[in-house]
Image (tube, rainbow, N blue to C red; front, side, top):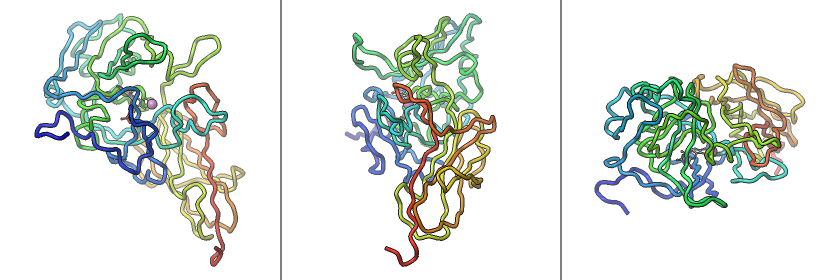
Length: 361
Ligand SMILES: Nc1nc2c(c(=O)[nH]1)N[C@H]1C(S)=C(S)[C@@H](COP(=O)(O)O)O[C@H]1N2
Ligand SMILES: [Mo]
């Protein structure tokens, strides 16, 4: 498979630590026990794909910017690299993360809690590119098209992966056209040569293998905008998914683990698309009482934070829970509203821990 001039980096077998839900297209998550660090290494970053991964050459790839703009642009890979670069640490979470905790089960990939990761993304500000093209006043949305397409049930021909953003979100200073991930060129599986990064929004907004950006005067009604990534409504006006609500996960100990009673440190991660996570509270008694955890990584506007909670664990069975609250006051519910497509389940996670007396077996 390899040659002297690979058209795109990466493309190896998924790391054995990833839990593979499907191989083609590749969908895989990183189980909680492997979510050790604030920055997720590229080879451990979750995969969420609708279609087969396109293979794009940096030599022939072009990014077209058109629609209702004064001056359409065609950018090459080298043009992107020449522009002022900006690096942001951003957590990406799939809207289906936590779906397997819904009862009854909802449609879609049964993600546990691992369809989330954090990377340092480097690229150019989308706003700079749009300003250069000159977005005209009548523009309502900006559409982003990926190079990937395929057949969907009940639809003729191929459907392309495409998503739109309201103009103000597209012009947000932190919305990037990213070409690097943790200091390396974007891996092929994560969107090489370039992808969108929309901090704070569910991962679906961050279109991979970006090839076209189109200014629109009407709201986009494509499949991945109107039929998926929405909370269905009986009256036919679904709620689109945008910002990620707060979530925290306990990374250690693992669910079902048996430990020796005594000093026990609970460790986890917490994030929110609505602002910096300002508090994580922990319960060791199934939600009756809550105490504050301590942050062990600094606050970044768009990334998760590591936290820990030291506890003197008595012998017996315990239910551990954590709850994140962001600076806007959003917090996690005990139960998230069930929906047919199984999105946005940010309910408080509960795990069981057995503490044994020293010498018990
Ligand atoms: N072109 C394209 N972009 C895409 C997708 C896709 O299937 N095709 N999946 C989206 C979804 S639902 C998520 S959660 C993220 C996942 O990004 P990752 O595979 O790099 O983790 O990419 C988004 N961008
Ligand atoms: Mo997703």
